[in-house]
Every structure is written in structure tokens, then in C-alpha cells.
Length: 363
Image (tube, rainbow, N blue to C red; front, side, top):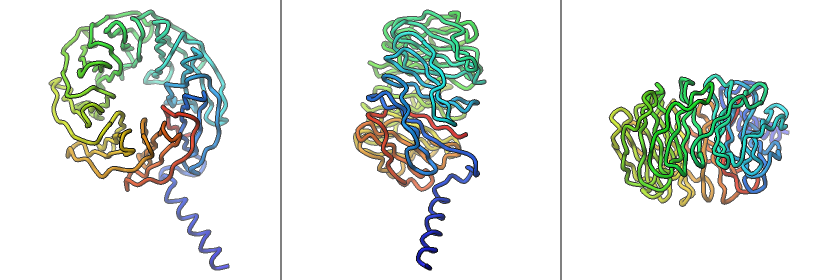
């Protein structure tokens, strides 16, 4: 009997340690993982550390985003040509909105009232009313728009037109074109400063990024890098831009005020994606070649000890409060759950086939 009581107390203590301190009873914390090969979303309960549901959403799911104000997770079916809305409480798809051919990326307005989708196959950008789930505006842009990003002030939508080597600056309300700016070849990722003054656009084929003045609609500079930019990540105060690069085997740092390339940190074999904890100024960089996530103290420019996170960790996100880091592994079809404060792997949770994208939602 004593052993049973002690075992029960130990299990309870372990559960409380894993459960984030800010997550009071009645709140839920889930990760939603897009499985590209089987067209599903895996809903993972991050308190119970177990799969909760597998939801069919359509072929080639991508662009998974947690809605900022509603108990919803949004995403796209790239082969189906629509945006889908998942109700987080019931884990059911409650809406599908057609948005043209081959959509891959989705972004929300700062107030959460609109969603913006770039449809690569139809050379268009769509604005969706998040309450009615209806398209309220549409605009033609350049060829093969890669991504559409909303400025923090909600005034602009910036679109990288991959096959035109241009960036379109649109009015967020009407989607009217304000400017078209020539940028680096094969533009892909976009990062916008917190004051909405400048946008940084990465190249998919060259070791460089473009810097755009959003208010004047002009190119400010082309910055040469020491490797191909795989992602763009802004420091919370907007003063620096962090760029993981597999070809450079590390993390590049750009001063966003002077538009100059500053430091470089050698991290591993193939760092391709990253996420940032604003509370601790730590960047977590996924190295798909070594199976590790490397925490980097950005103020000290000091990489920490690698954290084992599966075979080929890719996209990562922190839970609210920064207690846990979740990382998808498309090679092993798993989600790694890491305790961020101790940089230790908690567990690996099975997902669907070939997970590539994820979102974290607390409700």
C-alpha cells in the first residue's frame, strides 16, 4: 500500500513539473502539426504529452497558424486550393474557403480580423474575413507569390513574387498595389520591422537579402551574406535580424538600423530554421543534419550545448511563457518536446507522415 501511495505521488509530481506553471486548471495547451504526406493535422496535447486527434484537412497542408484572438487554428491545403479553419475546442474543421491555386503561406492582421493568403498558382493574394470566413478582397501580384506578410501596424501587406524577383506592397484594407519593388532573385521569406518602416526579403538562390523602404516603396540595399538565407528572425526590439544558413553552417546577424552584416556564429552542419524566446533572448536553431537543436544566447553570442531532438529536426515553436520547445521531425514522423529552461528532451511523440509545419495554441 505504501508503494502504491508513493508511486501515485511521484506520478503526480512529475505531471506537475511537466505542466507549464502558467497553465491553470481549465486551460489547454496543444501543438498542431501539419503532415504533408497524408493530408492531416495531428493535435498533440502538451499537458498529457500524447496525441489527442488526427484531423483530415486536405492535400499538402501548410501555413499552419494559431489565430491570435479566436479558439481556432488556420491553415491551407496547397493541392486543394483552400484555407481551412480548425475549432480548437472540438478538433473539427468548421470552414473551408477557396483561395486559388497552390496556396502555401498565411498571415493574420494584428487585430486578428483578417487572414491573408498568397496563392502561388494563381498569382494572387486573398484577404479573408476571419468571422465570416469569406474572401473580402483579392489582388493580382507577380508570378508565383511565395508569401504574404502583414506589417505590424496593419497598414501594408508585403508579397514576395518568386518568379518576378519583385516584392509587391499592398494596402491591407483594399489590397490595392502601392508599389512594386525589384529585389533579389527568387525572393522568399519576409521580415518586417516593428515600426513597419522596412522589410527584409531573402533570396532562395543567392547569398543575399534585399532591404525595402515600405513607406516610399523603394529598394534601400542588397546585402551580401556568407551563406544562403534559410529563414529570417527578428530580435524582439527589432534591432537585429537573425538568419540561419545551412550553407554557412551557422547563424548570421544583420544590424537592421545600419543594414550591415555583423556577427556570425558557427553552429553545426545544417541549421535551417529557428525560433526565438523574447523573455530570455535565446534563439533555438534546428540542425537537420545532426539531429540537434542549438540554443544561442544572442546578447552574449554564445551557443549552448546541443539538445538531441530526433533524426532531422525542422520547424520549432515555443509554448506561451517559454516553458517548452516543440520541434517537428519529418524524418522520423515525430514531435520532440523539450524543456526549455533545462535544455533537456522530455519526450518524442508520434505524428502523421512527414510533418513539416506546426502551430501552438493555448485555450
